[in-house]
Length: 354
Image (cartoon, rainbow, N blue to C red; front, side, top):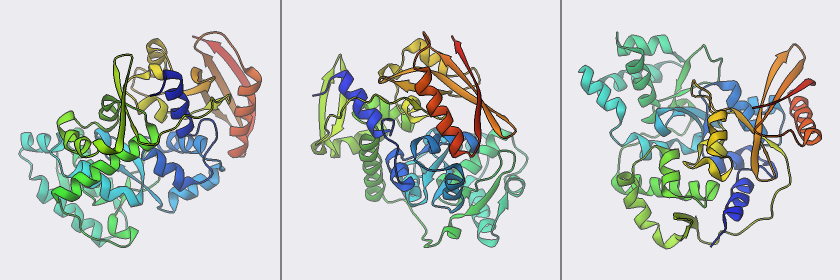
């Protein structure tokens, strides 16, 4: 149905790498979730895909149009607030590692979640210290897992703040509060919606790609993909089976240089990174402590990494090429554009090779 080159072009177009999104909500609806372990890298990732200034991106987060909750693979992500029920029905109605940890420790998870719910209803902001007092004297892994489960279950979301301060609010603070309970039909419909949106935002893709991105196993997604069969086009290419929503069309090749943020969807949304970089390059992009570096995309491939340092009112950039140096003028223009949206000035640009 599509060639490898055409799949690459379609994906880059959907990711906004040939033309940035004009509207924040449209981008978030397309991306579904941004990994948000640290606030500033999440903002940079967001900013690079949406045509707006840094201050406006910060305001979009502060206005509670998006929320930070734990979901895929029990890691912190930014979602549209309107998608929280979908997250609950897909991830909050299943047995996960939190249940296993609590069972091992003899913890009554439901009782603790009920106490957290009560605390959140009673005050505007809840601190991590208050949550840990409810949970009790357990390991950091157990405490973090229970707080994550409170978010997945639709109780608390993390407020945008510094990375060292953890403040939360109850879902009722967002307005139009309604209690969610598991319902088999609604739950599978939510999973079908998530799969549709994944293919709309990232397809054509394999089910291994979706499982890698979502953390769900094949048994969990099989009922949903069976129901979706008539909505999909399926084709095999080089031994891999790809799926796309019916009506998927090719797009022109992009000539634009694009600078991603850290943990960009182009790297983390697919199991097989070779659609955009070699396996050796992927190992360079992922640091030893599990952080995914920001990449430079040009001519439909990742050509290197980039990073910046604050120097008072200026930004100092470092470019690390995967192979030979190229496109210095175009990269410099993109770096200057990035700095301008932060209302800073670009300063020295260093070029390196791996």
